[in-house]
Length: 113
Length: 113
Image (cartoon, rainbow over all chains, first blue to last red; front, side):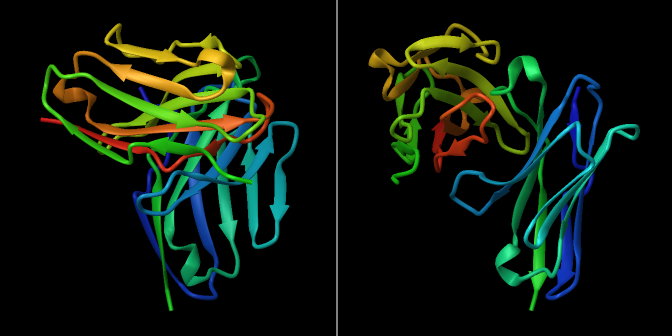
């Protein structure tokens, strides 16, 4: 039973436009959420995180929004660039097991020039 | 700063054989993690070391898997005997603090035939 779900396996966006990647979770004990980016043949690279005491965190072109009541988070990339093309993983953990990340299956983002 | 390094990058073995994967974490990182991604599925936690001690091994699939981290530096993950369902990409990650984002290596792709 998946506790972290990324329901869109892929997303295609035009360069310069906004990319919105979505993630839903079921475990109300999760209090820390992360987004990782992965290129082929490489390991996941940390992108941005958010704790459950916040509803938004921004870092440059990347913003993560958390809606606790809906158990939903999203990653916004604006403006999107061709180099952003990668697989994006949503991950979550709870305070008691912070190193044990629960990952979604990932969304493959393609940014077209 | 050198990243997390994993060896080998690929391994092809026959069912019943033994394979040992190695991970060198970022220098100074006490926390070391093993994760696995089986084809088409999400990245799943296997275990977490703090220095040389196993903090959480709840994700280890069965007793055919043995992880060690002697001396609290590099870690090995041995699969003995390997089964077909063990095929996948094994990722190692490290972090300075438990609450810090994980730094992943590029993974070892294991194929059991």
